[in-house]
Image (cartoon, rainbow, N blue to C red; front, side):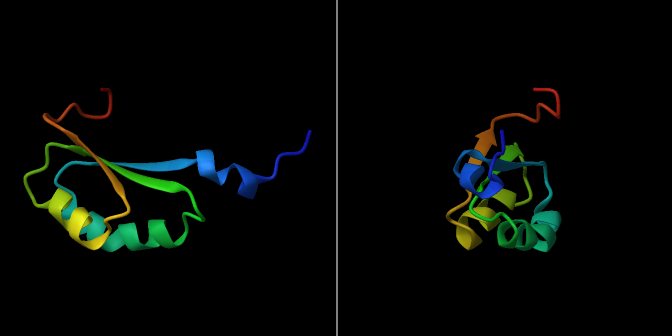
Length: 76
């Protein structure tokens, strides 16, 4: 069975875990979006205090943001 990658992109998501990484989002998020090829881009924020969330909301309103109330790290 052959699967066409491009036909499955609607069910593909790129999830970026973030904690106070605004400088990294500024640097790398544009490239992620440019290469997402239709996949959803999600930023899961672990209670950042560095304006990461407002940066994404203002500059990339189409990116889904999950705002966690506390920093659960990678495991939660």
